[in-house]
Image 1 (cartoon, one colour):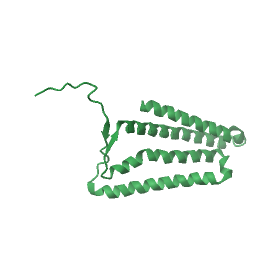
Image 2 (cartoon, rainbow, N blue to C red):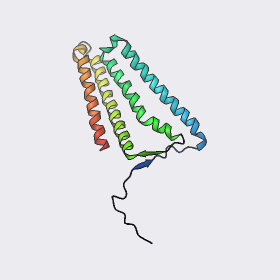
Image 3 (cartoon, one colour):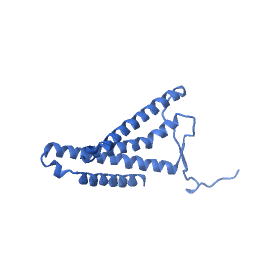
Image 4 (cartoon, rainbow, N blue to C red):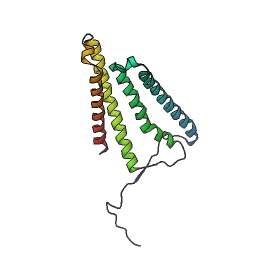
Length: 166
C-alpha cells in the first residue's frame, strides 16, 4: 500500500455543497412555491415603488422619494443575491456552489446589505432635517446633496463588501 503525501496545495477547496434547510423531502414543492411566491411579490412591490417614483416628475426632486427609489432598487438586488440560490436548493439540481461563486455572493450580499444600512441612515437624517429644521430643509437637503450622499453610501458599501470578501 502506497502512502499519499497531503500538502496544502493538494487540498484546495473548489466547491461548497449547500445542505439547505432541514426539511422533509415531501415538503420540497411546497417550500419552493412559498419562497418563489414571496420572492416574486417582493420584486413586484419594489418595482411598483420604482415605477411610481420614476413616473411622477414631482417626486424626482424630493430627497425622500429619491432615497425610497434607491432603497427599492437595492432591495430588489439584495433579495436576488440570496433567494434564487435558496429556491434552487428545493429542486433536484446540484447543490454545489463554486468557490468563486460563493465569494461573489458574499461580496454582493455585504455590498448591497451595508449600502442599504447606510441608506437607512441617510433616510433618518433626511427625516431629522425635515422635522427639526422645516424652514431650512429645502436649503439643507436638496436633490444634488441627496445624490452625493447616495453615491457616498454606494462607495462605502462597496468598500465594506470588498473588505468582507477579502
